[in-house]
Amino acid sequence: MRLVCFFFVFFSMLAFCYGGDRFVYFDWQVSFIDVSPLGSNQKVIAINNQFPGPIVNITTNDNVVVNVQNNLDEPFLLTWNGIQQRRNCWQDGVLGTTCPIPSGWNWTYSFQVKDQIGSFFYSPSLGFQRAAGGFGGITLNNRIVIPVPFGKPDGDFTIFIGDWFTSNHTNLRNKLNNGHRLNMPHGVLINGKGPYRYNDTLVPDGIDHATFNVDPGKTYRIRVHNVGISTSLNFRIQNHNLLLVETEGTYTVQQNYTSLDIHVGQSYSFLVTMDQNASSDYYMVASARFVNKSSWARVTGVAILHYSNSKGKASGPLPDPPNDVYNPSFSMNQARSIRTNVSAGAARPNPQGSFHYGEIKVTQVYHLENKIPVKIDGKLRAAINGISYSPPKTPLRLADEFGVKGVYTLDFPDKPLTGPPRIGSSVINGSYRGFIEIILQNNATKVESYHLDGYSFWVAGMDFGVWTENSRSSYNKWDGVARSTTQVFPGAWTAIFVSLDNVGIWNLRTQNLDSWYLGQELYIRAINPDDTEHKTELPIPENVLFCGELSDKQKPQDHTAKSVSSILSPRSQLFALLILLAPVASLLLM
Image (cartoon, rainbow, N blue to C red; front, side, top):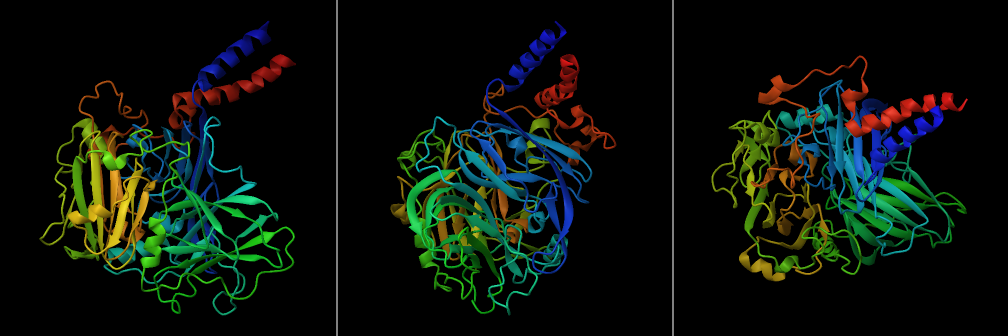
């Protein structure tokens, strides 16, 4: 009888815990480890001693619970690039919405992924830390009832590419703090490893490289993320076509590319069929774009694609990149060719199910311009429309919640300022459920990648020169790709449309880490004034961290013996309780 009662209670609790959408739990220890990806020993940020960090493999509508223990010697935050935390900017992991996790503390992220599929990544958002690692992949799968517009692959690889410095991230940010620009990076890493020794002069002996093992005749889905600092990279696999099928949550028109430019912060997934004769292994290459080839030759990542029936090691020259070092027209045309697969059944950016974004009435227009960083008050700064963002000590959303005045202003200019640039905390006051057109004008000398948290946006157009009202005639108003990160070429513009249906305060930034660190970011505030019952935005989380003018509200954490209640949500506590009850069940069965 005792056994029957136990299992009645056990399964009742289990049904309560897992009723509705699934909960997925992760427990992460964030710490420094020593590695030597380019031959020089340095500290990198690892998650559970992994560099890059573990893959978050989840499904549409999953509730994700991630407990983060910060074992670094500095504050830490993770942001979820491209994941739309519906109604929940509290979990965004940037300084505008969240206080940093202090050294030695833990904090639990808890959010639900809604109406999304595809390839994304997470990364640190503070203090130039992404230059030290701390990033990992997010694979967001379709629910079974939603068909995928291609056959099931025989395997799935996640690949991280990015430029890399052998200097620690603290030295890099100090260099920027002292008014200096970063020099050429020391190399490109693929999955945290240095290049295969394809050239004895450029690649020293003893460098570990990444190898991807495949079988002949099979097709693999390869998800590629540029998690680097500021370098656009061209990705290619020797003698293999890349069939593009998805980017940042949108199934694309399926097209073959021999190589694709992947800019900082962007994510793509390809289908690659192993259709070669395997006379040897094949090079997988990520090389710097729009740079002098001779001086940047060592800034090249090389991994190995190894067939199970390979007859030898890869050798000889690398496959050639596009030959347009000083003319990005080829790259822009390539970007324009990436369009939404309108026949695919999948989650859509809002308005839900709509491909008619070109017919929606625009309620706000912002023309955002960046230039080469300059010194403001003696410090090197980057700006948008003449305002270099300086994060207040109190997060913007937290200030709103507790009525703290003077933290920020709602006067971000809709056009570039004509006077000298200044430092400020000015925010775009967006209209809830408005439809905003944003023109990103890049008047600097390198490609900038712009990212918007909390949303996918439609890339309507891009071209060289200065945007004018007549530029709208060139917009793609039907199947422009929907994504969360878009490139803006130097001396060019990119136009995007955003439906402001996701309540909260959301970060718009360049993903180029040096420009971001120097202030090239802003926030968009989209608040529903009639939301008295938290129907359009979730309430402040119970475990919220306090800082700045609200520091006196912060309760201390017990770091000597973390209780379940100190790190887990109530539903997670229940899951832990079930685990604790398991030995009781064993005793009852004896």
